[in-house]
Amino acid sequence: MKRFFALLICVFLCTQSVALAAPPDNILLYEEDTGQSQEQNSDAGTDESTDTESDSGAGQDAATGLDVSAPSAILMEASTGQVIYEKEADEQRPPASVTKIMTLLLIFDALKDGKIKLEDSVSTSEFAASMGGSQVFLEPGETQTVDTMIKCIAVASANDACVAMAEYICGNEEEFVKNMNERAKGLGMDNTHFVNCNGLDTDGHLTTARDIALMSRELITTYPQIRDYSMIWMEDITHTTKKGTTEFGLTNTNKLVRQYEYATGLKTGSTDKAKYCVSATAEKNGMELIAVIMAAPDHKARFNDATTLLNYGFGKCNKYEEEKTASIKPVALTRGVKKTIKAEQTEPFAYIDTTGADLNSIEKKKVLKKNLKAPIKKGTKIGEMKYYLAGKEIGSKDIIAGETVDEVSYQSALKDALNNLLL
Image 1 (cartoon, rainbow, N blue to C red):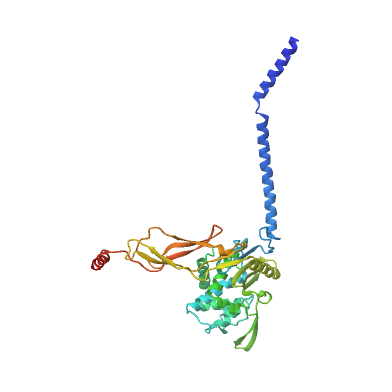
Image 2 (cartoon, rainbow, N blue to C red; image 1 turned 120 degrees about the vertical axis):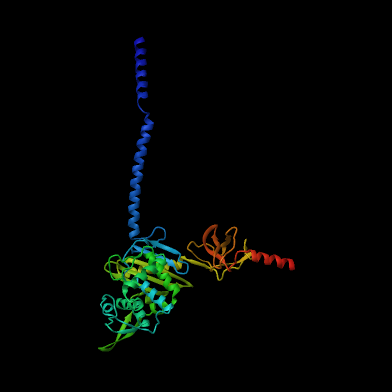
């Protein structure tokens, strides 16, 4: 019996010795499970990412339910620049003839600045006539008015007319393209580089859906008369050359002009590299939208995608727009010849809502810079008018000085003191 108890004691001591020598089982298991769990989560994340990428390339967008076949697209409201939908909108791609939006923008800039007139005659150079691609078959030495050239570009996407206008405005296409890139930079088109004025496939000639929307917005809001050209469905021009006089028919490359009742423009494009692109503009109930599609697989897909985006925007969006800016009381000022300075809001506020919120509940709050000191020039920003919906800031407009107020001087202070004594 004694031997039996001694044996039990030995077994017990050996067991305790082994337990102290090894890490606790629960800690070891916990580490293994954690490692396995991380691998499983990583794998699950990878699978999830793959599925998402696959869905974004084709099929419905999970957030909006939109089915856009093109790899790059954007929907923007024109008056505010507010983006309603985007898909790979900053991916650089060749834009094909959508490039001509910038060409048209520079032409209208030149008209506005008085550098050219609509009735001016533009001569076609050998180089311009040699462009190929989409063209109106201008012959070397042939002249057309600026007005006709714009029609050829906006309606028939004429490469030859683009170069002829570039040469007329800047002397050569290279200088014109330089101006295109400068204008693009000024519009915040950070991912754009133009190499030519017509969009023919050339290495390095790239832009994005977002940048196309930006230049489209600039064109249609600054020069609404572009509609007079982009909405032409068919029109004849006259070629007058040494061979005689012939009529040539222009037909709009933008089929939405006939197929979509709210269409207002704007420009199509297609090449082997760019595939099928369009910047489609449309207006309904006072709201104008810009739908940009890049690299669609065929011409039907680009128009279907554009229509899908426009219909979504018109169905989803509600616009809040102030008719005029509210009056602002004069703002206190120190060290000035006046104790207050006139203040005004730069422009009325506009906002696009896609949530169905009550836009009548929008509130605004005036936020002015503290301790304003003279001198302050007219137009200087002195604060902001901030707008809120359901407690969330949705935008703002600058508050600026409505007059110039000089800093008080010894002479002006003495004059004021004398005036006060005489009163």
